Image (cartoon, rainbow, N blue to C red; front, side):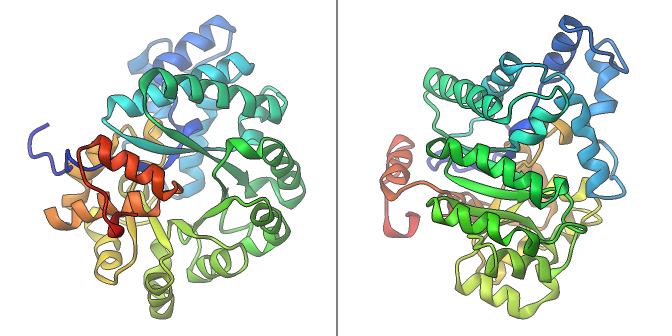
Length: 343
């Protein structure tokens, strides 16, 4: 790629990538035809405008509605396994050296009334097989979809914790504006008791108080999006001092109208304030982007220089839910010598 701003001697990492938002258009078509499922179009180019976003949507929930075509084809465990395997293949094609893939087992199971535990097993099988075949390490983050409410999220959490050894963290995602983090205190108490890390979608569709709740009540170590943090100086200082990392998703935030354009995104402010800021894809199957696109196209348009873009890449390794030994292994694989600042 021309003008490649990615450091080839340092791991390229995606920490915020929804597995169920990364389904290939070809797979949607093929599984729909195999199982007799209705589609709005019968070829890739015809299907594209129904699945992928090109213009800004009115809000986050309108963006999430595009998931319909991806979950529609999850008719059984084999389909879940295939989607998981292909997701890893695709991130490897992008040159990604490590990823943390997240998914909501209840969301993936809902359309065809699958067993959420069986969905987890299928995803784990697909991801582990692809990771083994490609030599690329991948970890999984289980999502509690707050849009279902606290009761169903308890069932979803039970499914995740029944396979606790397959996950590194649990996330809270969904309709942030109408389902506040404080409703999920008891859920994340169990998550922390299980020894799992915590990352939370916050500050995307709601204000700084949503981020405070995610950190102080749920124990979030990383925040997905966090755009609204800019409205609270004390919060910015707290996140910098406590090393609360931010999972930035530039194109996604433009497409959901969380920000008007790349130039107005607060990613540069986050870096200037010393916040551990990372760059990620969110839902590449919907946004029609890759992680290299975010680094080489979106980041410069957001006003970042080459040094700042390289800092994003370094921050991703620091903020990852890998052990120091695993981080060192990634660095050595790229020919970089580990240092304290990297780990």
